[in-house]
Image (cartoon, rainbow, N blue to C red; front, side, top):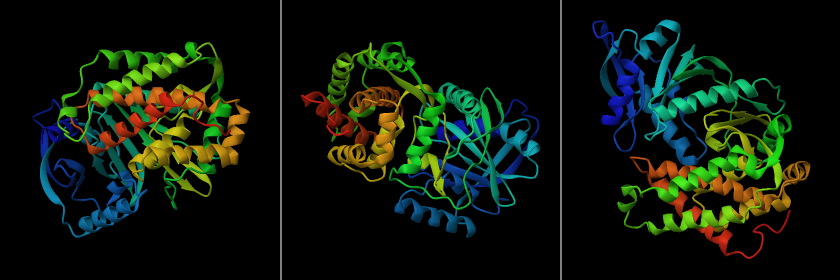
Length: 400
């Protein structure tokens, strides 16, 4: 309950301890018993499901179960004190004609709570509330990115608009379309959106002069000097020597780059995954821009979509992931157009993608208090990917 207490205290308590009232809430738990969603008893519709990605069949089934448990009042009940001037109190006053539900966030150093605000049974806004210094930085980064990208008009893409913000929270509009779908298969709709972002924000510079390259070097330096997280010892089926080999292989790939070479960089979402987007009528609705950067190697989001969806949704092995990417490079007309338009060396950008994403997330996992099984899946795939990169005596993708 300690992690629950941190979230609930952050949202419901304030220094104004003499003015508080008791309210009844319902909640739905994670598999480990911690609170996932919490909502007031006055909520008329399970609007908290707007947080929930249904990009897999299992997720669709679970969503149906959650919906039934809501209407039949099967969820657990909890009494909470709502302090005057707490975050929840301020939101209730500001949005007095709205109801709300709360997602308590994913446990980890980037944890944030998200408050869903709904009116007339329709979700209008989301309020992201920072719960750590790291999540505060991410929320402020999202604010800066959205302010910049909203200066442009898009034909194939919709991104959230900022309603209001402060140093530790941001309120954005709900961009989910009425007839939304989610797809774990990358197609032309995704690539059209990426191409549109590239066309508006692309700039050329040498690899060594990019902030992207500086971040990679710093991440690998930190990992090289860090002690291994003790959580890795708890899984007897995981060979923790893979971490050391992975870091060594990253250094090998880093040293093989021609950093004097000038290539194209642009704004990148950096968490371009099926659960952070919706599709309707050949149009992409893309949200959760917290990890976005303005100096990202082109096709980072293309590679990331395939790796994440194949590992976490399809549970594919490395060979399958490689074949999916290679097939797109060989047969995807839109991807070929992007490669030609921006003169992309696909092998080089693939290496740069892996260096950035693996060094970033491996450092994040190494500082995480709570582990989940997917971390081991991901690291095992990275290990195979880097072994393949280092072992091959030629460029990994022959066809372009």
